[in-house]
Amino acid sequence: MYKYKISILGTGFIGLCSAACFAQKDIGVLASTHNEKKAEMINDGVAPFYEEGLEGIMKEVNQKNPDLLQCTLNQEKAVLETDISMITQGTPMRDDKSIKLDYIESTAKEIGQALKKKDSYHLVVVRSTVVPGTTRDLVGRIITEISGKEPGKDFGLCMQPEFLAEGRSIEDTLHPDRIVIGEFDKKSGDILEEFYQYFYGDHLENCPILRMNLESAELVKYGNNCLLATKISYANEFANFAELVPNVDVVQVMKGVGLDYRLNHRFLGAGVGFGGSCFPKDVNAIKAWAETKGYKPRLLDAVLGINDDQAIHVVDLAEELVNDLKGKRITLLGLAFKPGTDDMRQAPSIRIVNELRKRDVGEIIGYDPEAKETAREVFGNQINYADSVEEALKGSDCAILVTDWEDFKTITPETFKENLNNPNLVDGRRIFPFDEFSAKLNFKAIGRIKL
Ligand SMILES: NC(=O)c1ccc[n+]([C@@H]2O[C@H](COP(=O)([O-])OP(=O)(O)OC[C@H]3O[C@@H](n4cnc5c(N)ncnc54)[C@H](O)[C@@H]3O)[C@@H](O)[C@H]2O)c1
Image 1 (spheres, helix red, strand yellow):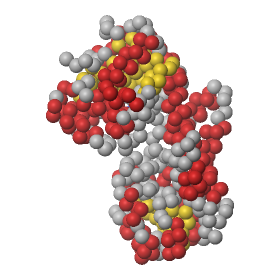
Image 2 (spheres, protein in one colour):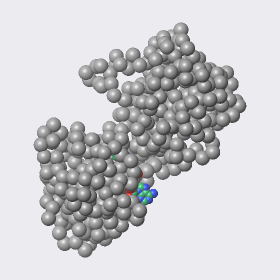
Image 3 (tube, helix red, strand yellow):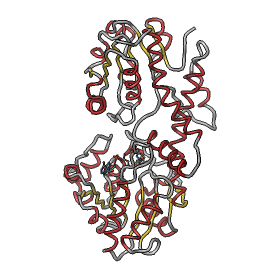
Image 4 (tube, helix red, strand yellow):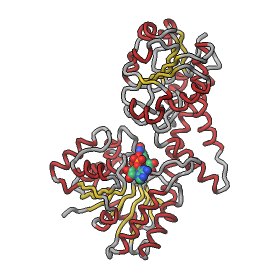
């Protein structure tokens, strides 16, 4: 018998990383998915996607006791056999850039069906990023209508936003800097807080638990991601200021800014802009949500506008080096939205490729140490794919550094010179030493121009 039995409804990054970490601490977890292959893999202790440390924990748990982490295709069963259900479904961006809540809605329906048959109290926790009002007015309402049960009496409702970053999911799950609990009522929040006291034990000493209402908790998550995105666009705006004055370097400027005790240096790196599965989607989602309420979010409009323009700016820099991009062969070093992942969702490379194509380049050749296959799904034959830096550079008229992979930091000016048709390089992430590269190549970098 376990002290807790939890169902995790949705087995993406958030769901599976939580599931594995809970199971490692002897909490019984029943995850659910609609994907048969994925369920089989999870039941065999195999991670269905790459995330540092995840497979190790899943294997360890599976060897210790396979029952600790099980996955089912039957969501209703997962709810019926547990006391707490966490909703960790995806909340992607629609074509009109608003949030798509379909997977949250269908999960709420299944929870409602299950609770109709359940006599004991059940706690439902929304962990996905959802716009304010979703937990109460969509999830809570649907469960109430379908189950006939009363929130606060027969079932509890919480919203606990997730702050982990892909690539550090396990580390962030085990060592959160705070836990935010949005609660329908005190009982719901008490149960969730007790659960985390049990899960984290002594680790919670340096981790505040903040309790608030459901809508505030929903908004905390957007507040967080929007501020991080704003810092990036702010750094990019200052990169553009720096380029108005010879030999001003945005890297030094942001270092000076970031040392202020009221700020910190993180997310002040100027570059080709943000991408990935969260920032673009979340900034757009909360903006679209505010607009439905009659509010025009000017700051977030600017954040997104600056971000889109960075891709055009980097192509402008390349054009300045080669005079006219028409018919030229251009190399992109890095395609994934950040290093350490093959994730291509909303990657800046997509905006850069679109802009290069608008300017009629002859050929785009891309190289990424991890994202070749995922990039192929996005670009198809719009670009060609190289298997090495050298192959990507061979015979090109200009290279643009797009993703700051560690491996790229050691490429020498000589390698660019030996392989490129013309030694033109744009550093879109400020990873190369400016003086050395400017002396040896036709070199342009975000946030600094030469005298
Ligand atoms: N990934 C992150 O770094 C991160 C960080 C913090 C918060 N979040 C939020 O957590 C939630 C889950 O994120 P994730 O990255 O784990 O999500 P994900 O995209 O990996 O999807 C999670 C699950 O949603 C369901 N789903 C997704 N697409 C579906 C489809 N087309 N049809 C049916 N089901 C589908 C599946 O069960 C899937 O396993 C989102 O709201 C996200 O914004 C994500």
